[in-house]
Length: 274
Image (cartoon, rainbow, N blue to C red):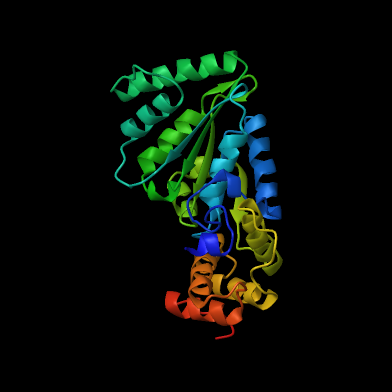
């Protein structure tokens, strides 16, 4: 028996793997989606989402991508996994993400292909959108200038391509590498940590997704989860997952503040009350 069977859960409720089924539409995430869709639908060109580690930027990016109807949008999500990226590589990736197959190697040729592809997308009545996660890793003035060049492509209805950047607070400095690009930011969203009330709703929401309506965590346990996690969704997941395992090992069906304290010590977490 594992803790899933013990607590009668269909699957792990607090995995940190991004899964849209577990998406929690907090007030700030709901507002962020409205603002980002506005930027896209009005073809403003560039929108930016900034937040600390664990605030749900990647989750928001995946949710936004899922909500963009394929009949109306030509949309793609690109995750930056390392900083040593050339502008040629990035432009080629953009072209592939937007449906081109025989992409050239030279920058000028790629830009020509991109322009024609974007023109075709707009002529079909669709909106081109590229979401980019972890953009703070692109610490290159040359790449920022390429983004600005793409945003210079316009039609009568607005920008031919819409870029949505997701990144850590360092993204502000990266955008500053090209001041004209920074000035083109039409919408900026800042994600912050959850409140205590959001933390409570978030935990209950994820438990409901896996079929658990009964309370497992006491009110004081949830308060301490909030204090130790500082309201960061990723840390909330880690604490709750470990707490369920600890509760299973202790053979208790209720997770109280003592279990949360034990987990916090094991994880090396501190709260304001410690």
